[in-house]
Length: 95
Image 1 (cartoon, rainbow, N blue to C red):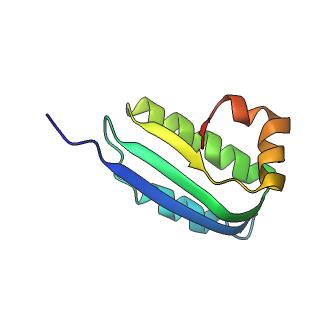
Image 2 (tube, rainbow, N blue to C red):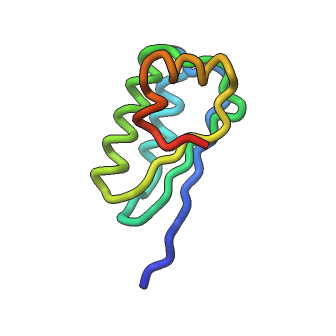
């Protein structure tokens, strides 16, 4: 039996148009496989734009299609509110 691997990506500062490509590169670098747990640690993320939300949604789709689990961790209150208002809190596993 293969060991469950947890892959963590740290997202800090604002997730706006100027920083989307940086986060995209981090996400593309992950070798997500069946049974993995992918954690997006957003403890230091201060803002998210609509394109950032779409990026998270795309990551969710990619990870779940590979049979892995995606968890979003540590959203700041204002960012959490954006997730709540947009309905994303119902889509993602959040800690």
